[in-house]
Length: 222
Image (tube, rainbow, N blue to C red; front, side, top):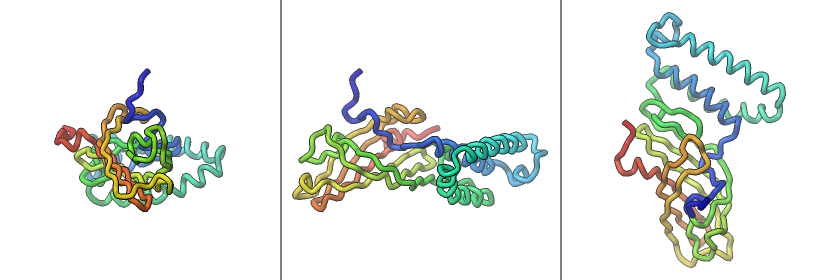
């Protein structure tokens, strides 16, 4: 089966782990609560929204998390440190307007009026077919770190990666390379097309920015 040169196998722009998937369930509970009227957040007698069901669902998830914690104490300690700050932000959002974008990115549902910003770093060796460094072959790769993923309420997604090109491959002047990337590893966004811009400077600094193509042309989610 032929692969799209701009979509190399194994390149995951999200790079989620099982723990992030569990985190997405945790965040879903809080983002769900932000959609409820104020009276429904404190009372189980709200006929229009199944808050009680949500509480029961979360209680069951919490029990499963504790079982996982006892079987993977070291891994879970690290995971809980990472999720605590995000959970705090989610809890604070209960008292105000919704602060989640409308689409789902990286396993986390976003709803409401604000942008969702994921700043957790992920490191991968990205193929030069996306970077366009003249001194490297298309099959070569450069180690880069994903600095952020931003999803807006309109559904537009922007992902930024940064890295350093090896000394021998650095250009004499700035190089701007435009390409495309089709998501082929992350199930939720399979087939999503991104316009990409890679900028390489003579000092070796390289930045790759991916922007959701569908949303840049005004075809927002209805």
